[in-house]
Length: 161
Image (cartoon, rainbow, N blue to C red; front, top):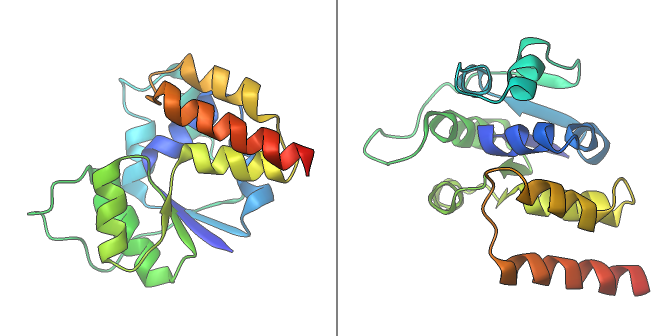
């Protein structure tokens, strides 16, 4: 399964030290150069900048041949990640922002966010969901109490089966 990532998922997975689940979940992981630039931006957290400066061997940097029209209001990373995912016929694109997910859907690409990545990793016993979500809450990642509780309940139900 191949996946293209926007900036947000990589940023938060690095911050909570869960970035290494990606190559265990997905066979091929791509990012546009613009995402790497955002991760290495001077305003990015130090661990994220350090990660972006020394990319892992499993991360493929690629460029889309066409971009989303600029009339669509998306972040730079999303503007490049969505068409790249469509061109590569990637199984998924990792995007946290709602408008980015909608745009991905319009391009025929299924989008999931950081929370879904963590849930997949927990399903495969690559990490424990509750501590990962607590770590995520210590960052600038926004998740409502209701959504957090629903994820934890799904995890409890999964563990019981």
